[in-house]
Length: 274
Image (cartoon, rainbow, N blue to C red):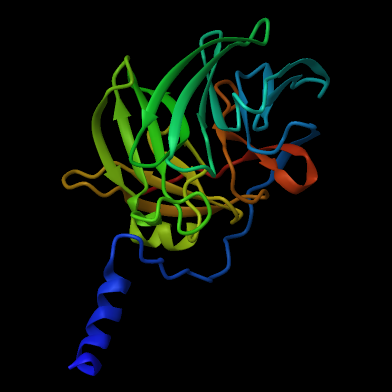
């Protein structure tokens, strides 16, 4: 009897909520051309830009740099116990809005951190507490906040959930969820065993997302129906994963980081025609 049950038990384990996704090992597309490249000591998690300055982001530090010269003009440092894992940021007006979490600690807690881009001072925190994932992205588009709640298979992941539980969540002005979508299986397979580390709404109305390790950007769109984002195409990037941000002034300029090299890169991305 036990011998007959063992295959069924193994199948149930594979189909369970925390089952690991099969990884796609196909090579990445050729990278988009890099038009700007700067050294930035804080370039460990991601980059953001307001078109005049770029911001290099680390777990507990942010550097402000002038695009025209690459000169660092200001820096913010936080206490590691209060800022254990700041991930991605975007500029909204004169504020740098950043997604933060307690990764890789469990249970997963998340917060939104606000900074004044003029003074590089920390303004306030909006604690989101316990969510169904770890907050890695906070973007602003079409009058809404857009958050990514990342889930991982392994380090930093909740044992009850795997990477397939990663969601893009539309939120109102008070960060209350309004709608949510999961990521396509084909994209999750490229991100596995990690999750979505960066996402920025493009000027063309598409969603551009990155994983943790691969040098590529997934171009997505909201579906006409259902709860899964749709993959439009995959573009190559010179940097591997991590947080990204579109430049609001330079057409098709996408900011990213070279994590291992301590670099911030600006790439000219091709137009997406679909």
